[in-house]
Image (cartoon, rainbow, N blue to C red; front, side, top):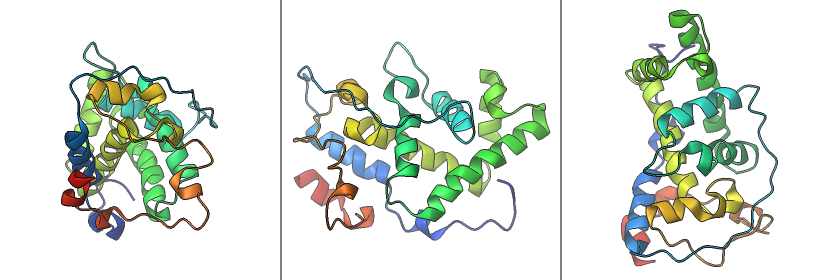
Length: 212
């Protein structure tokens, strides 16, 4: 299978999930403040993905292309987006089908990149990376894959550092967002609490988010 397989059907986990991007934007808008206080957060020590092997090599290249470092703000590297994805895929209780889709997408992207350039995606220059992502985005599968990663870029930028991204709250400072308190340490994240249940984003409405 590839991003361009005509038999591809948009998976139920994707269609049934309310856009996390909309929820997070609403939450950020409701709590944005003009001047952020200086944040003093301890560095979170978690297992690190090996960026020399797949799927992390390609995922790291993709998210850094989607959100490069710039003078206007931190990029995926500073926000540790790949580290967030690693914690997400290895630890958090998201659908196995979604984890599988993210990983398979790496193979499909490299397969397409090899067919067009004789190189894997991570080996390409910026211009060719852009061409590959634009090309796959024209397919349903490619669009869903890129959209999924973009949603997690937003999520990582606004999540507590214990979830793998947003080290020392740099994403909050950049977006002028006040994170919730108390911040959960590793070991007391929502999916690690006794008797915890999977949280369905579909149950969170914009109205409820803005009231919180």
